Image (cartoon, rainbow, N blue to C red; front, side, top):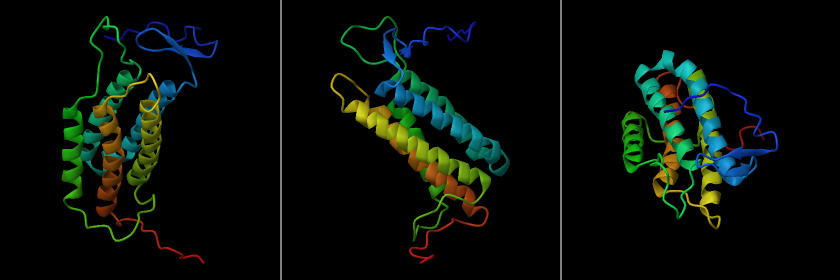
Length: 193
């Protein structure tokens, strides 16, 4: 259980931050950047939910579950796997979370027309904010993949799958909202030449 009595600790004044297991890393460390960008994605989803709640309650419930999953993902990334047995069972993203988000993508996508062009970020306020969350989640994914390719660093397959599916979910969710309004905002190649 998390218990925070004091918000500032001054321990980061030297430019380091503590991982969940205790070791300190520079604040620009790739692992810290990865879970920080997951947190940024979650903040974007929080803004999107301000609009989505009014547009579709079922989609808002999906986003709420995803928001919780992103805290799980942050906990996973902030607890690096080591050769030593942990003092406690670390929280990890599991395949069931990937399976659920895939099922929700399929559910939302079932009613959508096939794409005939690339989609521009826009449309309803909720859809527009979901597009922003999608682009930030892609950045988190790039950082996680880079971290996984770094010697001595491990990122689990379920965590990588989850963050990859997340951007797909956010894309389909934005299309779902726009389909209920004016439709997708489509790219017209060379339109302004």
